[in-house]
Length: 504
Image (cartoon, rainbow, N blue to C red; front, side, top):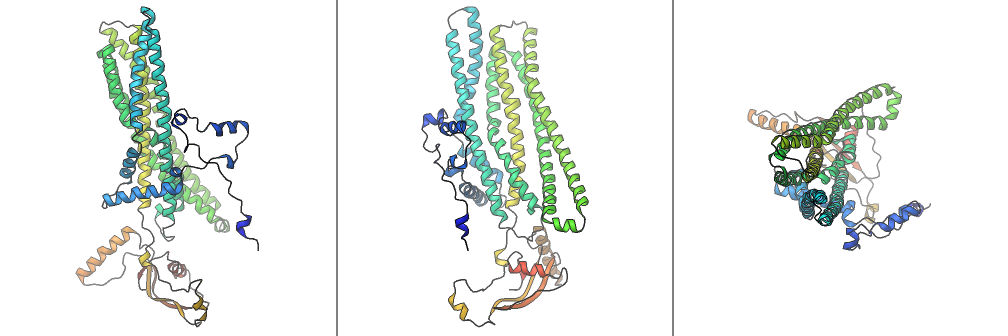
């Protein structure tokens, strides 16, 4: 027989990751991936050309890291743990170094607007300061350029690490769930949706979550500079933005989060039904259920598309606010300025337009994306936490087996009628891991104690009751019975998938 290991495809040897040994200058100017990019220009890349991933980006590292911060949260708040709080605390602590970059970029954008106004004014005054303000303009643009790319790289990388950690944790959790669980939240469709759809929300939230603080902070700085340039006129336009445009975007973001939650639940149902159709294709064909399944899947898909269309319409209104707010606010500011008896100059016009462009980008784009991304991510984290908190296999309720070990030389000398598995008065229930059923069972037990009446498992669904059997070595044991008599439940109890409620 050919060894399977010898016929498997060998793993290609990958080059080391250039980012690990890159210098500060190389990271600053993005020179470290240049060699791979040049190679991709010459020929198509193959798997062996791709470098090894860094240790902090590996699935094992991020899963262990994710579980560690979740366990720490369980220790801090055992009664009411929050995965949102654990992830947010770690996110802010691990990306503290991007905050100075945000500060530098915020100052550079305001100075850039003032430099543009002074540069235009220097053309009329001909005072020789044009080169100075042009240099300031270019320097501020360089600061904003480097900040934008590096902040997006760091935050996107952190979002990818959270995504990888969540997928690995979901998969690891699914291996510890009982196959007899009847909760819809542990179905294959829900798990697939969590690992493929919900985890993607970390990327958008990671990119724009810091703008929830820096966008309002920068807008206050712009208000101060604009008031210095135009006085109350700029305050009127700023009030229009804060009172009308921003609240509208918050309302749209809240509705979008609501649609996101509804879409996720509908997608779970659709993926679960499709998975059932694929796994049970033979049964479906045998009973001619194809059209029934098709109608049900199409009905769920139609409902899903309707909700997606509603969510996309909110995105359209959000984009409309973004592209129209700048023009409307600029018109209001200039009209109020003229109405108050002032005169517009090229310096004030260009500086105001530049400030409004920055204000528009921060408040109606970055802030709205931050609210929308965080709202979606909040819903996804809630679903992931609910899945992670679902009860696992009860090791204490599993049947203990005394099967002889594979390398046990003394087992061959034992007599054939030795009992290797002994079940005495074993009772199992399908919904023992159901929290609602167990809570009702505790209530019933208290009532039975008060009333003096003994009723067994009134709120639990029995799989089989009071089973006693002895399985001996070297014997063939067949399990027969009618449909629903407990044959599969008995085998699942032996496999440890169905915990015992009584007996041993």
